[in-house]
Length: 432
Image (cartoon, rainbow, N blue to C red; front, side, top):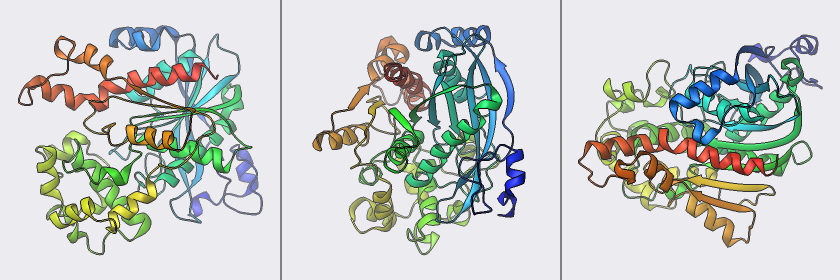
């Protein structure tokens, strides 16, 4: 990619770190000067959190928040690939002048290619601003490979190693940007992420501690509703909510990374989906809703959607065989078996129909426990979700009711995140 082969002279002009002997910029070097998009004031943040009900969890803002766009050098999913990723840095401002710990955040599954978190109107960005940056934490959040300004040709979905490099390099980018955007960083780093981002943030903490222990002072990780046990998730007889998005996304992603998941796309996917599924996600225009309403992906119950999309032999093989190529790819991206040095908190809600804690969070915690790891805690926020959103303070039980459909369709994407972020911040507050 000649676009990224900057000279060291040009690099210096955009705050790049030293190039060394290569004409590729160093990982985390800034491709563009960081751009301050806006500053959210304490009053604006408080008005928004009060009207949405978030303030009960976030508290009132202590700091203005500067929203900064980043575009930085990173690496691809395969060895030797130099590319870029974009993202956002949220800088405590106004009366907040003390050195800030840095929270590195990884976002949840995204199907819209143009979306960037460098957008003050983005709900996920505002949640980060209210929960962390307005409370005195600096935040950096990557858009990942293949999104927004990234020139990478696809998104390596749930590929642990490239998720880790995207997040780790975002920390480097934030450090490179700090002085020019008025940020003073304390040197302490925390990793957190939600859903796909929980997988990404755990992979990033693992990589930071294992490979860059002298570079990063990792003080905690809070990994929220993440799919840590991907091979185990293939064994579930019933499909998860959102199967028509998440499973083809990872099947086609891992095929691009490894080249071993299938030899013919028609062996995996039924027509008409087999004709375009390999290059469908992330999509330039369609979102979760319109992917289904346009018929681009199937609707129905999770099992109906799965069976409309996948060849039954492929589904059965991945559920039952330990040598099935999808199972083998999943094993490479499981996060079981690592030992964190810093404190770790796992969070989720037992009622989550998309990333069931029984399959992921509980298995991850049991794995830590089985190896005598004592610095990991696990939190279930389901009681708070039921009390806040359940009819009469309870989860609805009639699967044919509108209330049931509303509750469980909103559980993972809307209800659960703020409660888990509040738990994450409570952990970070003890080590900041």
